[in-house]
Image (tube, rainbow, N blue to C red):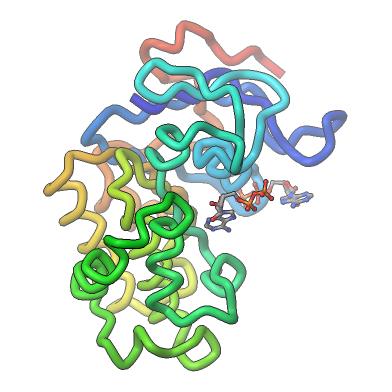
Length: 230
Ligand code: ADP
Ligand code: ADP
């Protein structure tokens, strides 16, 4: 299970973007997190992806609390969660070719030997041709770059995938294609999904259950911690 327990997090400890938010994603489960722009969804997604240390509360992966964050997190925890953000241009190194963007996590974890095979496998899954794999970000569309970012998120076979507005900038056919890639990955691996977004129709179609931001922590079974009023 991926458990966010009573998370308070943000960029200014006196005015946290997220207050006391609790949410659990079980293995194989697809959970949608729905809320208006600016409410704190991305901040919570960054905590769940081990990219932002919360001010208080805890993140547990299969019962193990995360104690160190970002590159200091233990490899087993860092690689257990994959993440895709809304804007591929902000999360992909503009100097790299797409094939190296996809392979980045393999290099970072000393698994360079697998890079060629695994990149080819993922490129086929997300629909990137070898021509596109040799291009750099400025030579491809947002949708093509987002395909590479999704491949990067899956390359280490994470047990949880966080999709933070992954398709918000994409057209309908690319959206459908990327959602299908995630569904196939989940079916093959039993991974859990946290899909963050503002489009209830998409989240309801995609996910087993959709949690509204305003209800975070309240309706969660097992967290044992009701959200305080005010
Ligand atoms: P959402 O994903 O729901 O749109 P965010 O988590 O991105 O919401 O933002 C929540 C709040 O935190 C907003 O008020 C936003 O302006 C602020 N915020 C987001 N990112 C940063 C940042 N890097 N530095 C400072 N404030 C930020
Ligand atoms: P630090 O600044 O603490 O060294 P980094 O920014 O390098 O941390 O991020 C740590 C890890 O998180 C790296 O493996 C990096 O690839 C990953 N990461 C950071 N930001 C993003 C992002 N926007 N999209 C995808 N992965 C990211």
